[in-house]
Length: 312
Image (tube, rainbow, N blue to C red; front, side):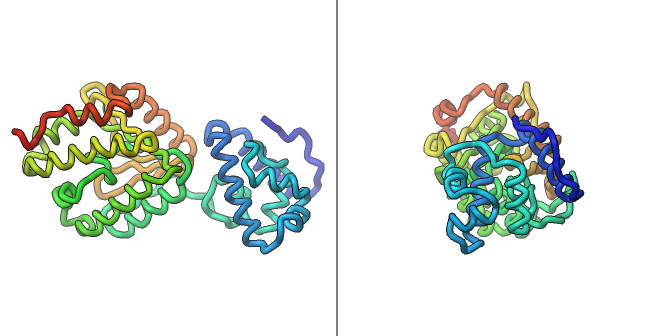
């Protein structure tokens, strides 16, 4: 880990920027993997280069780099970040915040307001669909950890969506479109999603018990078959873990990479932006994985072994 041992500047703003980078440097190992940090920085650096309209030589010279160093940063050959003074020059020269440049924020503004640690967002309207889509896009290339309330959204069949839809939710057609879009995202090569859910949810679906009691057998059989097929088809980009709900409990939530976590509470999301809260839910998710009795490579076969709803 690199540290800043001495700051030779009388400019208070520069001193503050160095201090900010030092804090980021200390926090980063717990907050984001080095490869993710390098990838995010590389993406942002490429954006600045494209916006500038300069060739690589001129761009490098404008921030005190030589062309070969810039090429190395853009190529992904190393996970190391530039020196602190280079990062500061890049941010200042192009009018962006250090947090944005390092991939710790989606807001480019130098004086952007700090997000509150906890926000409330409505979960049952079209605006929430757009919000969730944005969160997924922002977390693209990082790991998404998902504990669903029932069946994972992007694994649901059209008939399951129609069955679960309430009057307060968006229309069935809108939810079907949303599920198909999420499924398309999960098929991308860079997709990295882990899902943890109680195996009893699938057992109840197969038997037509509990919330599934009014759903016809053919629709339940179709849903069981789709989950089994997609658990195999999307592996390893999608990894489905099943835990015993009698021994382990979890509220439904999603961790969107290192950026935010959202806990689902019916018609609302509790959105957690603080690093400590995101880390805590990430650790909780890791505990669910350790407690899982069915691992991702076994999930498809386990689901297919459930009683056939159509035969009952």
